[in-house]
Length: 625
Image (cartoon, rainbow, N blue to C red):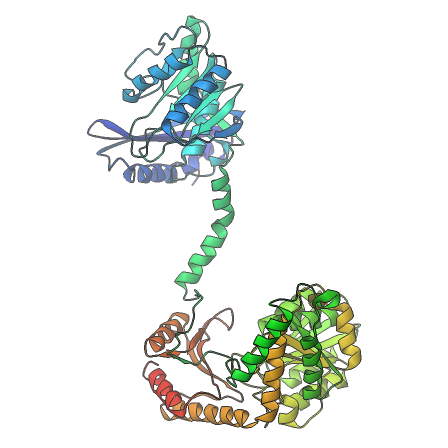
């Protein structure tokens, strides 16, 4: 139950904490908060005292006082005076004091050392240097102040910078006060300040060596002696809330990055943390998409090297400026011939190929119908297109038809699906897919990133495998079975010309390097000339699937991807790490790549794997499940 005071916006509570050890001051702080937040404020300030750099106190005093009608004042303007040493810092103090009109700056600085043993501030006549505080040991304490935005609660972590600005702002608003010098007694905080109404708050980055417990402050006064008592009353008793307390640039950066840090902490704690790593050369790599082991084929490497020597390491421009080189055009003609279509267009990556095709074909007023387990590049492209997005159940052609039947009113309908689903290894029933698309006059698009070189008797993909027609838009990559880098879209001459004119990732992206194009072209020639590589790959897949099944691990696949479902993210990571210690690189696939709780170990089989290594890998994983 809240008291009436809790609901009164004009009433506050001033919570003051002082902590000491064997009679020596350790920590002091205060907050002005709404009455309902007193309890958590007390707890946070006590926690702060118990973790102070000077040690654990043996005495903590907490006082709660009611205050009303706190005065709001605007924070002083803040500037930083960067110095490299305490000596330079004190010279800067002298300079600032002289600029502010204090003719006896050096003498004021000399008196500052006398404040180290005081519990409060020295109150000093700015001109005569007469000390005006009634009790020289106690000094004058500026209290009853806080930042206005702290009313909602209390922070237990000390913010020297903000607290100093609040104090300096209140002090400069006191009658008769014309300046202040301060240096914290915190051994780890070496910064101090000079404050005046004219200069504002001048933060001096170094006034002492780190580890030095010295600290103190001087309040500089100009006025009648009979008004000193009112100045002290104001400093010690008048409730003040300071508006607009600025933050250090570092603090602003930290606040801006705090949400990123929080998300990273969640990733660490939930088993979703990812690391960049290089596979050890002596390990059996069961995570690479180099399905036909062409990336290290001597002929592919030679073609790439010769192209780099002839055309350079990079292209220096987009395809429509001067980035197109002979290897780009040769590869595009070769891809079109291989896929049995009019033309092909090459992009810098498979991701960019999907992005380039989907965002060119579909826009606001159109609809994209997408399989629920499509690759992230397809999902991202759908979102970026601005088109309406409709998702159908995985490989459910009946659900696809139901969804398409409700999309007749759109200008264009684009249906897009992976050909081989990279996390499950299953494949699209292409004939049924094309039938539904054509029935509802929809563009059909299939991503064959994991099908080229893998699916079909000679690795030509889904059309060869099913013996059916071709989709309107055939996308693929050069970075998997072809062992190079880049992506492509193949189809009619009109489609490819449309993409040249409309696809922003093609128009505005620097062309892929000639070496990657020549390497992919050489790999495509090898695939055509050596279909036994595809046969070896298929045999190796059967070996692994049968070996796992014989050991009680039930798996199935229609491609070179063999998923072993684990479920828990942390367990999947732990098994992956354990397998690496035994010489097997098997990736743990987790959210957001797959659904939460559906983590898996993803085997990617290559034609170069030996039967022995696959049998050993099956034994190793079965022992850990």
